Amino acid sequence: MASHETEAVVLKVFDHGESDKIITFFTSDFGKITAIAKGAKRSKKRFVAKLELFNHLQIFIADNKYSSLMRVDEAEILSPFPALRTNYDRFVCATLTSELVLNWTADHDQDENLFHLLTWTYGQLTKNNPLPTLLLFQLHLLTLLGFHLHLSSCCQCGTEVNMTRIFSFFSPKNGLVCSKCSSLQNMGPTNIPLSLGTIRLLEKARQLSVDKWPRLHFSKQSLKESIALFQSHNAFLLQRDILSWKELPCR
Image (cartoon, rainbow, N blue to C red; front, side, top):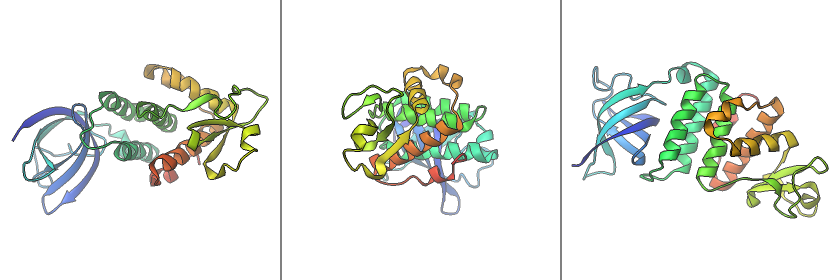
């Protein structure tokens, strides 16, 4: 069986039988993988405190010709991010970050940019206001996935964003519609009202490099509007709800 070494973050863990654990990782070299750690529940050396949610690891894995599950032979902690497991708000935001990756990625679909975005996000969640960090992660995740949000003008008539019209986000168009266009047709629950400040903030965030994101400031209104936007848009695109959105603070 072929053996591999790669960086990974822990997205999901559950017990299997009396002594094993099954872990879903997102790795830098293989994308999302699921692997079994034999004897991990009884381990006092190889895996103790290593296979925990959100941990950034160096893992040693092997293929399994009898199963789709790979086998974890060893793991070393690179960054444990303990604050993500001891603070409720940070835990909820980190959990939602992991759920988004679990829902949006296919097994063995390697994406090094997403891996670096994920590790950056976990790190920022430990030290900055977690909600803005989560929302910036979500915005850039959609861009990496090819869902570039159209936030500069109305998708229907092309009117640029300005103070003379009210704009909302319309998921089927993956962008904004102005009040004049939205009044001409019934857009239903996928039409999310956005203030001018929120629109400009998200558009600026989309254009900035990741290292400059901590400089951005979300008002309470922008936080609430952005949460509503991304919760609705994810449900529309994935055709299912991600329940952790409902646990977020500032709702």
